[in-house]
Each structure stands twice: as C-alpha cells, then as structure tokens.
Image (cartoon, rainbow, N blue to C red; front, top):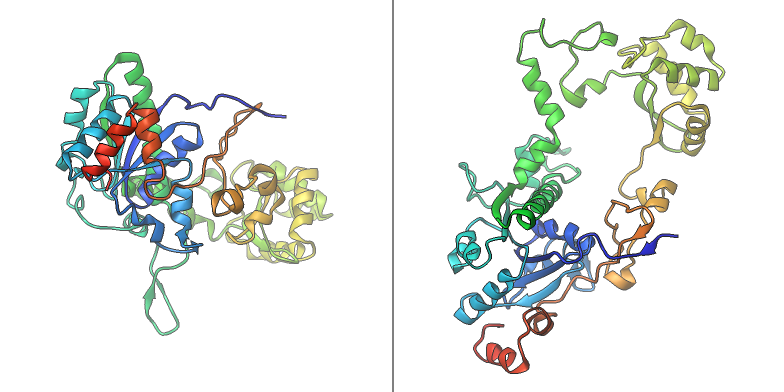
Length: 411
C-alpha cells in the first residue's frame, strides 16, 4: 500500500492575492503540499458566492480552487497591513497576484518593492489577457478566453437566438496550470542562484496554446499545397484543419452501442485486422485492408453502415472488454454526468468527500508511486487562519496581533 510521506512541495511557501478562478494556480501547489497563504480583504474573495452550484451557502468554485489554503485577512489600505504583507513576502518563495496586473503594485507590494526585501522572491501574475496587448485591461470571465481562442463556437436555439453552448472550460484551467509550472521552475532556479524573477500568464494565451493543433493546422495550410499535404492514407489530400478532419472518418469514429456510444480507433492496419477477426468478419479486412498507418477509411459510407450495425449488437462495456482482450483501440464515450461511474475513473480518482471538503471533488491527478499525497484541508472561511498565520508563520505575539486588530489592519 502507498505510504504517507513528506509531500513533494513541503517547505515551499506561497503568498497569494487572488479573486475568483485564477486562484487555481496555487490549488495545484497546495495539493502537492506547499503552504499557501491566501491574503484576502476583510470582505473576502467573492468567489464564495460566484457561479453554481452553491453548497450550504458556499460555491463549488471556492471549495475546489481554495482547498488546502490558509486565509489571512489584511486591509491593505492600512500601512500596518502592508507591513505584514511585506513580512510574509520576506520569508516566502513566491507571491501570486491572481487578478489584474498591477493590483499589488498600487499598494506598494509589486515585484520591484518585494525583491528589495527578498531577492529570491518569484512574483507571478495570472490574469485574463496578460500584462500587454490591447485587451490587457478588458474585464472578462473564464468563457471569454475560450471564445477568444476559437474553442467555443456560437450556437442558436429554436427561436434563432444565439447562446453559449455546453463546453469544456479550457483557459480558466490551463492558465493556472501553466502558471504553476512556470512558477515552480522559477523557484527551483531562485533557490539555486539566489535570484528571483517576475512571470505572467494570460488565461487566454493558455487557452490558445492548449488548442495549438487546430490553429497550427490552419497556419500550415496557408503554405503551398505541394509543401504541406494530407497524409499517405488520404493520398496526401488535405483534410479540414485539426479535429474537423475527423468528421468523415469511418475506422476512426464514434458509433452507437446497444446502450450508449463508443469511440472506435482502428486506423492502424494491424488493429483493424484484429477487430475484423474478433467480430467474425474477415471479409471486411480483405475488401478494405487500408494503409499501414493513419487510415480512417475516410468517406466510405458502405463500410460505415456495416460498422454501425455491428456496434449496435453489444453494450459499450462488452466492446471495451473485447478491445482489451483482442487488442484493438476502443474507448467509452462518457459525459460529465456519467464519468464518475466509469470503472477506470473509480479506480484512478478516489473522490475527496463532501463530508470533509464541502463538495465531492477530484484529487490532484499526478500519482507518486509508492506514496500518497495528503488530503488538502477544506477551503477556508474569510480570515479563518489570520491569528494562526501571524503567530506561527511570522512569530507575532498576542499583543502585536491585538494591536494590528485595533489598528484595523485585519479588518
């Protein structure tokens, strides 16, 4: 059995000033054992009320992105509070500004000021569109980064009104993820060289980067057709860019099973042969053997009709078991609602329970072999850890903490 051990990021301390979803940058770090101190205004981050579902008065967004963190309230309009923030930054590896660029600098807590106190400090900003460009000050929410990146297309209802279709959010998750990666790289370098740095990530940039295959396909197709072609199996004829080129696939396509859908992926000749033998239809391989690699039998409606009828004869689970036994690629087609019932999901993602965390949540997905990561604590209430942070992290005594409270520094 995996054994509890010292978390990978134990000993890393991050001071965070954040609003809403960009706070996810430090969720990843807290999940891996970093000490994350979320400095909030006395009113708190309104993420607790933002979007749905609301669970016992608190949003799922807050419960997830702020799990494992400590909340300290500071009224940064007060000079005493600014001094406390500087004390925290002096002993930290990083400061994260997960909001509009310059928010901390306006309080005298920007990178230029903090590096004077702590030359090794890593200062990371996560914002909607980044620190430069014509959109840098444009207010936005998470969906904006995906529409900007060309990921979400407009849809129309039966009355002709345009609406936002159901979709996977990319930018609001990818931005914090890439930010966390860059931040850790900078911390490693700072610990080695003694020199910190400032970095920034736009969630819009991250959305575009995650969808690089489609945008780079368009760029490639702007070059001459004798230079950039389709692949050998398509007789080098160009398909539609990116994943749009999957629509006409046959050996690589979704099919109805008797109780749902499966994704069939026998574009390699060897896998296609295994499938035909498995279903007792070797003549399908004899008639349409295909190329050795990447042959989707594009546009072959006759074969598609045969496969449509074949896949309707078994359940999705039966097809998955056959693919495993007979060695051909096939996958379940789940929805966000059904995913948690999938046996692979249940094996890989033991959920954090709502009893302990306020909501049932997915854990950090990276696994350390032979180890278990500690479960993060429940997302904090506003200022829940103020006294503990001041006492245990900064070593303030009770008299000094009370003086800060009397001065209004804590709100």
